Image 1 (spheres, rainbow, N blue to C red):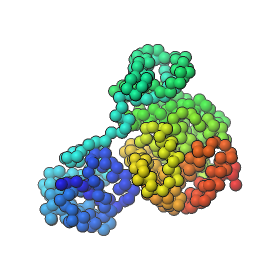
Image 2 (tube, one colour):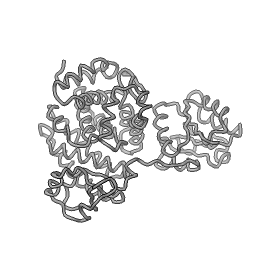
Image 3 (spheres, rainbow, N blue to C red):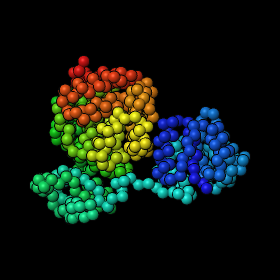
Image 4 (tube, rainbow, N blue to C red):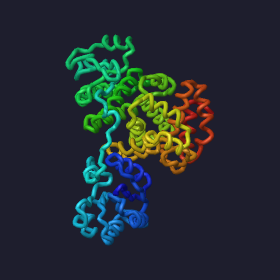
Length: 460
């Protein structure tokens, strides 16, 4: 029975990310190889079980071309999919590439949207996975979003119980601030939109938020800090971007809004001279997914400022990585519980106890890497977002000298904020967090960010 896919790639980071991509289109077992010669040896012993071979072109100790020619010479009729950034012309170097097997294919590295699914469509077990939120009939949005705009762009619902939603507003109905206040008094936190109407709903509010974030950015120049209004706008914009990405994917509109958000975050932090008021404005803003991402963005950017790593390109990479690091998670409360539960746990224990959480940073990195216009290094920061200086983190167990320096900045801020969330946002908690981190955050590329973190909170 054909039950396995063999995937050969010598770059461990690329391999780990791409395996997750393959898993979204098939349930077959994926056998990972780091070179062509090991792949050939595996094929010799297991050819009857292999449904497909996927391979990078250039690898040490045996290339993708070597694997293909082994299949060709041994007449193993196993479909071969080549990953290459060199274009279709490269298959001229592969004997009878199209003739040897009708399912042989070449796709870009990284694959364009839909390329991998098309190349693997022949697999019997093809089952394209959907993000959890897409399985819902209704998509939740925070009530506060309705403060902006004068009418309901689509039908808006109130959730009465798990299987019953009732109309709150019909499409086109007027909205007022008094309505929001009234529902807040009744402890309403979320309103709901039918999934088939989400695109129109998002487009309406992204246009409004785009104007607001632009206003906040232009107004930041010359100010002495971040206003409560600015935080509120950042929060709502981040929620909209997050919902757009996990429900409808990338559009030019969401990319434009993302860029405005990044620019606004950078402008805000460059005008915030005191972190304490900023943290107070951010804490308990609402959903952990957005509050935590914004806080991580601001604190990481402050560390960069003190390190004098302040080129716009660097600040953009880090800000985007912070905003999108939990993009594949959909439940803020669950995300917070897992974050604080596993932030010091052994990586093998995490992998066994909660494999979905174990994979989330790699999946988020893969997702972000496919978005045109996002700096390439942003996905590396996200992929390494749960590594620790001593190598006990996940998913790769990288030590301080092997971790991307910008990821070390974000990870330092991340570890500190987890301690603050656990024990409360106070100077006493900050001191306790720093003393705890001193055990390991002097290793490798973590040393300088940690020194600047201590200076920010005046802990010596």
